[in-house]
Amino acid sequence: MTEATSSATQHNDNDGESNPYPAHWGPTAWTLLADLRQRCPLVQCLTNFVSMDMAANTLIAAGASPAMIHSLGEIPDFTPQTHALCVNVGTLSPSWVPAMKAAAELMIKLGKPWVLDPVSAGASGFRLNTCLALVGLKPTVIRGNGSEIIALSKASLGASKGVESAHGSSMDALEAAKSLAKSSGSVVAVSGAVDIVTDGNRVVGVHNGVPMMQKIAATGCAVTALIAAFVALDPSHPLEATASALSVFGIAGELGMVLAKGPASLRVHLIDSLTALDEAALLSRVRIADM
Ligand SMILES: Nc1ncnc2c1ncn2[C@@H]1O[C@H](COP(=O)(O)OP(=O)(O)OP(=O)(O)O)[C@@H](O)[C@H]1O
Ligand SMILES: Cc1ncsc1CCO
Ligand SMILES: [Mg+2]
Image (cartoon, rainbow, N blue to C red; front, side, top):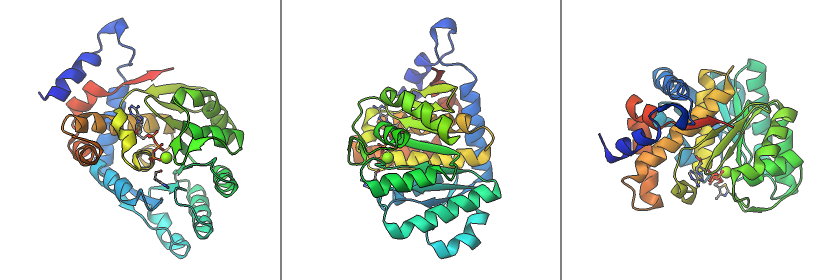
């Protein structure tokens, strides 16, 4: 047993009342990851230039198949072949918007899931209006940091540190996340030390990951792509799929951290750990709780 696995067993050994993490979440997350590796869902990503590499490698490490195909002209032929779509506005320019809308509309028409990452939604009017229009196209899941979810929920420009959250805790965005989930019909996830996932009524917290994950560009974008792959497997249970993807990605970070010397090597070891993640390590580390 590695050092990482042995310490994990201590905090998730189902020792009755002292353990706040219901035992069903481990098998739920493992079943989805095993299914993902078996079915290798094709995930189309219209994503920002910074995240293309990290998101593609995260999808491959998990067992999915990424395609960073974003031109409007290819959508009618290509998008129907996909199992899920990820739209990320990180390096938005006006020429990208028609393709984002067309791909999302086509997924809805085909009854397939799509996921929105509203990077820095409150940074400018153009970005906010684009994100609000995309929310109107009924994403299955919206995943952002605290500032992004608050800006979307209030439909107003707001404080952020560029693409990073200006809010110290994801909990600051809990009410905004619930309200956005209710108004949009989407599952909403807020990343942070504890990732919050809500459908507007039910709320779960995912207590996996390590703080250094924030020091790697595009970990948030990568986990949004991973959520798209998980939702492809079971589109009728997006809350379970989203919480499981966040937990699996966080666990890969925890395991990677054992070998990492800093953010650059954590990035490498996170991808390696996600590739190698087995049932025993996953079951001992999943930390998802009702809130
Ligand atoms: N303090 C923390 N402790 C543990 N995990 C964290 C912490 N902060 C963030 N994470 C994890 O890091 C990942 C990225 O979350 P973050 O909130 O930094 O996204 P983001 O701001 O959208 O990132 P980016 O825009 O760079 O892609 C998530 O998987 C999240 O769970
Ligand atoms: C740094 C950065 N700028 C636009 S998108 C992006 C990646 C993290 O969201
Ligand atoms: Mg982000």
